[in-house]
Image (cartoon, rainbow, N blue to C red; front, side):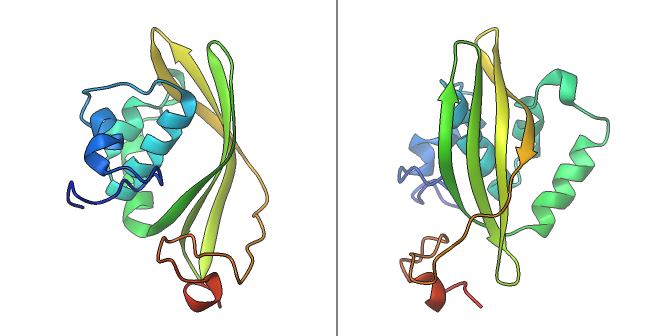
Amino acid sequence: MSQADNCPCGSQLKYADCCQRLHSGKAKASNAEQLMRSRYSAFVQQNIDYLIDTLHPMQRQTDDREVLQQTCQNTRWLGLQIVKSQDKKDSAKVEFVAFYEDSPIGQLHERSNFTLEAGQWFYLHGEFLPAIKLGRNDKCICGSGKKLKHCHAP
């Protein structure tokens, strides 16, 4: 991905003006939704270090690097949809759907929990939710601008 490309998180901003600032360490997420978006972009770009760094230290496992590398290598992400974001002072929940290429489209629908500690947001854990229904006449989530039925629908 070149810097001129739009950010994978769906913000409609250029990557350099969006998640790259967080991935490079030049900025920290100001809220949980921004962290969620930046983590999605990190999955798209296979930025394993960022994914581990933004996972709460109490949740880290010895095999995180290997599991994340395998997930990133085996998944072609298509788009992100934020369903709902609820922020409190030092905790938050973000419900999202991350779409990936499958036969034809797979979904990771999750309600994620985040915590703010020492001025930094961390991903804690998530609750998997049922897939959302996609309409064949809806725009495809991959960003092609085509209707789903003409792009990633069976």
